Length: 239
Image (cartoon, rainbow, N blue to C red; front, side, top):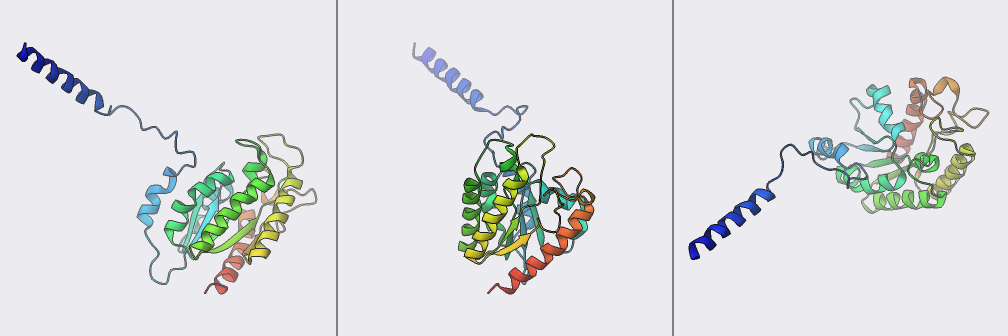
């Protein structure tokens, strides 16, 4: 009887051990990574901390920033510019990524471009107040960690090709007014992408965009000029 109990115990233990072994054929489930932290995790590890004297700039945003390094990689080459754009992301996702993709990289400056995907309703409908809450939280985190903040006035958009929405142009303008007012109140640098790209219909100039939302190379070239000016201004104000 005792021998049978010992065999039974060994059998149960072996079965339990076997059940705990991971299935090598099973793919890892990233369903909990709503903000796509895995996208830049390895790249951040390889990047490491800034070198002595390096004035690192992080670009945090969605597709406008992600496509930028694809359209004009030379802008980011040989400069301490770190592009951390992820297509389709809304402002709370940027906020979740802020520690990994901004704070931990120890930049001198962060450029925050947020709000369009929230307005287009990619994953829900939110108010401008809620967008601003997320932008303010990111800006406050940056200031707490001695990172200079550049807040962007969003590019003009009067129609999203993938969704019907009433008056996106006016919503973008309202958001930009809130961003500008907050930036002035907190003494953050303002980067105006709206003014140099806008047409008479409060959308993007046709010669500067591929779809009314995303710039073409000519549009990015204009953005590069105003971006460089904002970075220089922000670094001048750095202590």
